[in-house]
Image 1: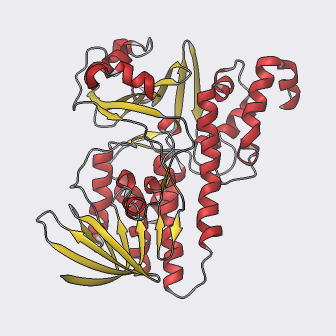
Image 2: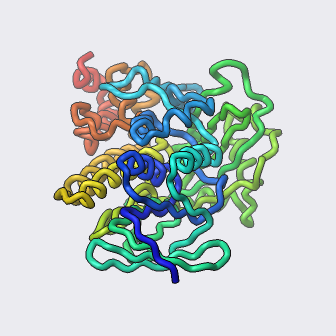
Length: 420
């Protein structure tokens, strides 16, 4: 069996693997990327948040992505009955990008992969990792390509960016139950023939049908739109009788007073995909000679589009630390990687939990709005969850719950707390 040597092996060519590869290629590292699927491929994660733009820029991918004219995303809209709450990323607490993209992931990931290949990065598609052994920090990984040929890679470090494939968590038995309640989703794309002109036609929206039930609408610049229903798993199971995802998604559209006319008679471009109990977690994010990034470590929930952000944040951070380690620098993986990533995950976990309790929805849809509170929440929604100058980051574990309680039970005290 043939064996080759690299500095760093990257498993997965999604956003996490691509930003890691882009950064390492700029440093002159010898890398190899292996990807189980053939591109382009269908995958979720079509709504980005501004923090990811820092990572694409640092990895040298921004220019090629920007040339594609993906739909700009300057904010997000949340709808509940006749109340609409719009978060404008240019009106957020602190610094950071004030826009990002809404993207068909098949096209987006293909552009990133092509950009890396053009720069000389070795990407092996339709190649599966079947085994891995560690000898200190060095590893031997066994690969099988689409023709059934086996080969081995010796690497000084492995970055697992395999997403839902969760390669190392499976091989090394690192999976653990998520701390979030089970939720599921059904989604597809439509040719948006009834798309309105102007901002309304391009606005990404989350239509809240019930406290734990919401519809996503993500328009793309190619004229198509992503539609998805998210709810607790029991609700989704009842919606998709006999596993009929097409009927289930049509029923979901009928539940939306806001969108039923726009989408009631459109045809799905592919059979709606059912993602069941998608939240995931691991016992550890790193080990001797490896790090887990993106969905291979943690995936929370699509409600605030945090998935790609954590993927790229962890991907580029793992690449930086691995490169330092390979070059003889001491790296504290617990502090500089695991604890750092967990702090951001904890913030978004709180927001997801408080969304589904209804407390965050109370803040979103209360009228009149408080602009100061909204700007601090907007910074979190933009992905800047490591900025502890923001009290809605630093005190995330109690501020939403406390403010929601005051709003419901003592509005006068709420005004006093926020300085009105």
